[in-house]
Structure formats: structure tokens, C-alpha cells
Amino acid sequence: MDYYEKFALYYDDLMDDIDYENWFLYIEDIFSKFNLKPKNLLEMACGTGNLTYYLCNKGYKVTCFDRSSDMLSIAYNKLSSFRNVNILNQDMVNFRINKKFDAIVSICDSINYIVNEKELLRTFKNVYEHLENDGIFIFDINSYYKLSTVVGNNIFVEDREDIYYIWQNYFDEDNKFAHFYLTFFIKENDKFVRFDEEHLERAYQIEEIKSLLKCSGFDDIFCFEAFSFNKPEMESDRINFVAKKSFKG
Image 1 (tube, rainbow, N blue to C red):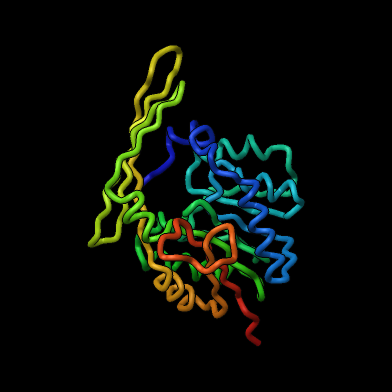
Image 2 (cartoon, one colour):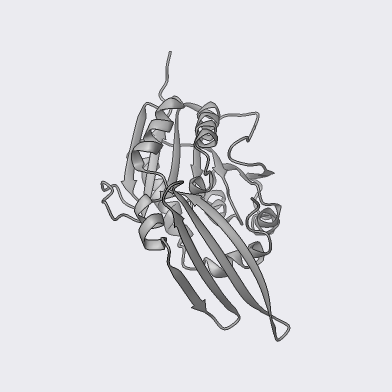
């Protein structure tokens, strides 16, 4: 399923409630907590490059990729002033880069978009292979609670001056799939133009993620309520994971 086609043009406007600078600072807090000073970073599913911008601006050597060429075209423009970034068109499951990294990050519940458990295991193994010894993997997920209950089978509507959208959701209990059906009306040349998108996320329990990480080779695995170092609660919306690749002589 292809995501973020025409939506890519309006992604930054619609996601303006996400504080990417705060997300960047949280990642730096994780580096500090685990006594790491990474230099070479890989960002998976970088989208339009919002987090990438802060990583590059801090001076990290960043390689980033996304499967959506539409999102990447915006990222190219946003990151054009940096010389410490390499932007690639790849996907999380099958990416291949001829180098290893001190840290690999993925934000904004990109992992939930991998709805097949075997493909998620392949992703984690791929991440493990691309990490240096003592490297760290940082990512988050929309929690099972959020996808099944908060989003669940609910409908959300937002009316802005130039954008109106309806977000209808259906949660499939059997397959643990959250279906998002989005209808947008965008004002262009004094007329509203409609387009639709369908997104699919898989709801994972914390223990499912930990088990797949262990099967991929990670021994040191931690999870927190996102943007903190607190233990996740039953009703936590977002869970952050940290997995370290321990040196094995």
C-alpha cells in the first residue's frame, strides 16, 4: 500500500502539532542516559525531514531514507543547505546501505506501518546488521491501547481555514489492524479539491516488540512512556523503545 502521495504536499501543515525539536531533544537525552556519543546516524522513514533537520543542524552525520518519493522531494528542499546528510529512497524492511551506524532512529510510529510480523522481524534484523557494536536503536510505536481504544472505531473532524478533513477509523480485533480512512478538502485557487487516503497500522503489545527484538539479536532492551524515562502505563498513548547492540567477542 502506498502512503503519503498527495498528502505529502500538506503533511507539514497538518502535522504542525508535533514538536520535532522536542523529539530531537528527547533522543539526545537518550544518548546521554546511555552514555553514548554517536556521530553517524541513520534515520528510517524520515518523511519530509523534520527530525532530520535538527539532527543535521546539531552536526551529526546523517543518512536518512523514506519509501515515499513525494515526501523525499520535500525533504530534499528542506535539507538542501546541509552537507552532512545523505538522502535515500528505500524502505524499512529491505533497506541496504554499505556502512554501519552508531545509532539508528525512527519516529512518529513508523514501525506500526509494518503490519506483517515476519517483515517486522526482518526490519529489526536489518537494523541490527547496520549497527556498530554498542550501537543503539531508538523508535516508538502507537500503543495497543491508543490504536484499539483512543483511535479505535472513532471519527475525528478538523476544520481549518484552507483544509478540512475527516478521519474515520476501524479497528480489526482479529488481525490487530487499525484502518484509517482520511478524506481531505484542500482549498486551491478559491475552490476546495477533495482527495482520499487509506492508512493501515498494526497494534503491537510491548512484549511482542521485545520478543522480536530479542530474536533479532538485541539483548539490552528498554521501553519508556514516550518523552520520558518512566515505565509505560496501561493507557500510555506512545511507547518508546531503546535497543542496544552489545559487543559479542
